[in-house]
Image (cartoon, rainbow, N blue to C red):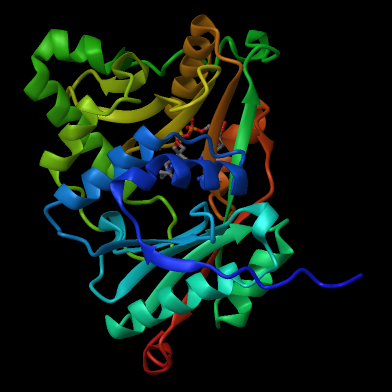
Length: 335
Ligand SMILES: CC(C)(COP(=O)(O)OP(=O)(O)OC[C@H]1O[C@@H](n2cnc3c(N)ncnc32)[C@H](O)[C@@H]1OP(=O)(O)O)[C@@H](O)C(=O)NCCC(=O)NCCS
């Protein structure tokens, strides 16, 4: 068999008219991550407007007919911001793989990041993608962390064994964000939600130190097209009024039968009281009432507390996502 010939591509800057093609490439490469052009555009807009002014760069690979067959990006992720750290993404349409498109994109991306003086680059792929893993290893990346997508079949979930666990401990009550806004007024409700979120998020495992969430940015999620305020479930500690635990379900940009979990977290003083499990049970009930088929959630493989809850509920693991890391030679010594 003759090997496939090299595909000559033009690497050029991304333009707004490319969003539909970018979404199509991403959907083909990562079929499980449902995506739309509008969703990608909304995310990019948030990055452009972010007060941390993260660097953000996209390129595409176009074949001789003008079809986009691959794309790459580099971004200073605001949630884990460091001026020397970049998240890189590179995707090639499956039918164009093995023909030099990835290399052409990687060379352009690499030149861009070297020019910017990047000291750390994060990029990921799935454990069942040997080409992607070998590609990243070739560029000097090594595994940093693993994450699982966990999926629950909502329709076959049996709540009966969890009837007692679904009750919150005495002194706590469950309320969703929309009702808390009606009770306290939106500003006080969002402030309580924000305070609980920030504390719970502090212990989520990640590859670098989390940057503080800015309250002004946090509030913008209220206008996000996939935000569902009735599915932001909060456990309020009645004596203090504070949000002690939360779980969130977000609508999916492309699949109405799918819901995606945002943060599930319990603030440190309120852990091991069953709040996390009880809220998750209530969110499954909400998903069922909505007619959803699946709930997706992503967890670090090192996050035993969260995995224990999800395993107990019957979430099933998808192949792990492997976050790979590259350090500039002079930075490596400092790790
Ligand atoms: C994961 C987390 C939400 C659990 O919240 P919680 O309210 O303390 O959990 P619960 O009390 O409902 O625990 C229910 C069950 O989960 C398991 N579990 C919870 N914490 C655990 C821990 N530290 N170690 C092992 N198992 C744990 C146990 O099986 C527990 O049941 P048990 O107490 O009867 O043994 C909490 O530890 C947290 O906020 N972590 C940081 C945020 C985070 O990582 N979120 C997930 C992001 S993907």
